[in-house]
Image (cartoon, rainbow, N blue to C red; front, side, top):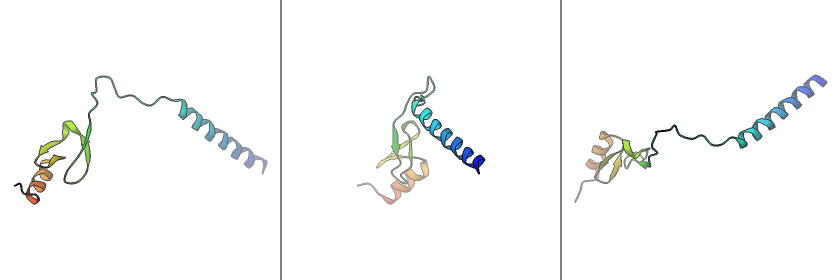
Length: 78
């Protein structure tokens, strides 16, 4: 019984130390040379993607050619 209580105490101590160490660590930084891009939302499905990968179209930006065509087919222009 003493051994089980000792193991529980060690586990709780390690768990508390892990939490305090995690708070001290600085947030990760992106690799050097990687430009940050704004995230945009596909007008058809709502998926978020980097603005450099988005396809512009009538009614917004899209995640792929199929969604752009589907959106333009269901939302005819004036």
